[in-house]
Image 1 (cartoon, protein in one colour):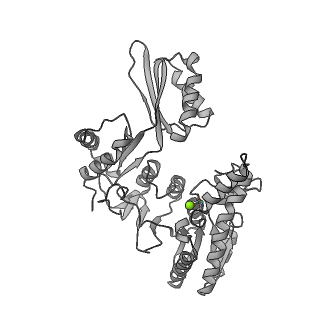
Image 2 (cartoon, helix red, strand yellow):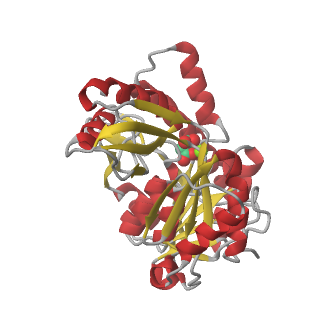
Length: 404
Ligand code: ASP
Ligand code: MG
């Protein structure tokens, strides 16, 4: 008998029929002799709808009130799921994040979990009751209701799985697992049966949209195996596990892409100690998250610095750079919003030289110019023109023989 945390995303509980299908599945899992804790997201797009409504009544929308509003979405799905479970003869009880013991910091709309005190859930499980928990929410150390950032129900599920010592955290979604590339762009993409936490982290950070980054970090740090699968077909999906258990041992596992970033270049920067520090401190002070950074070799004592930022922060980043013009004595700031990043990810890269060469050759053969490069021990990312990113993905997927 296992303890299984089952998390159902917004599409999995989008209407009455879907909620009844989820209830059937929870009941089935329970009747197979397992203990189940269900975690639910808000129905369909209801979080977006609530945010839109907030925007219509207020241009200020205080974050504390946004949080109170948004948590209503998950309360609706949790209580409806409990009702559907009652109909199929399963005893269940709903719990808000606060009731479930999710304690967070005070950062409204993007709170971090500080502690999980699952006593009430534990008591319910011991009494043969299925706890159904509202995802994405907690209560702060100041006793205010908080949310964990968009997509945060994954974090709730993983945190509860860790705190309860669950055997697995199943993440139910509208795709059948994690793919070797986005199948809408690369038709030959195939579902991976296993992948390591490290690979999944790199995927989540570089555009693989299946799991929220923070939930994967949490799962890795607390050794919670994840099973990403479909609530539409209920077939086995992708296991995210420790590297030694991930077994497939392909050199490259996946190709991801991300079109959410933009590039800023500061030209003619004096090549002196402290200059980069000034620029990136100023960006940090405005909460602009810088991703890739490239500095050219200097010529005549000046250099160029390029970096990428989220597209939504491009105007701020340019403004921050411009504001340092007198101080840094650079010549010009340019920006490009139509870039894309394509990344090749695989734990096997660590022990196989030549992957970088293959990536560059493949892009060269397609006539695709590489604007920036960054790597980790298991990832190679190239910034290319946005118009060429899909060709780049298909070519790389093919070059590393990732197709089914
Ligand atoms: N309902 C929240 C959102 O849409 C949390 C989640 O779905 O995980 O972001
Ligand atoms: Mg959602």
